[in-house]
Length: 232
Image (cartoon, rainbow, N blue to C red):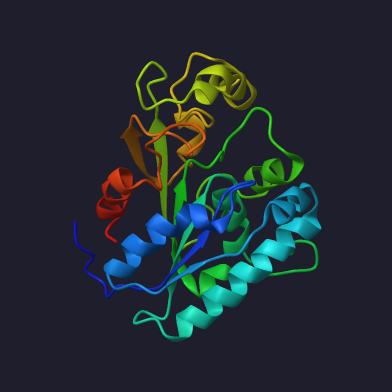
């Protein structure tokens, strides 16, 4: 599927405790399509600090710096946001014009698309800040933004699934969905990753990250499956 619009720049915010090199494959794929790409730098310490609002603003300030810079050089005047796991939830907040910890990002002024990959949007049990996002901005919340939510459906009996995902998936699913009888990517249930009101895509036998399976959203054999569907 080709994009009818000129290819615009992309800003990637990763997931909890996952460092930027994990997204090199996605960045390389997008650059090969002709897009400028910025992966937001985030150390494991940065992610540990996201227990508090200060940790969120540290990362979202970096998102904003890169998004506003790239928007100036964009053929559309806008950029695409990609958020993996917790990053996708945080970017929902970034797009709004609500005040948060002394910041008002208004990300929708420079962004027109949010792609979330395995993000725990709806959860029975969530960290206080992730719960706050879904409480204040349930589902699609900002007009003019193309929200696209991608979920993975990992077969835990397949060769793709890691031993870690086989051991931990049931506990994760129970915490997020309230039951173990759901499909998911080894960490996030499908029903949680499919943001209400967004366009949806479920990828078969796709793990949450490299720890959970050999083929995940950022693997060479998976990137094109969601990127082409979205129009990148």
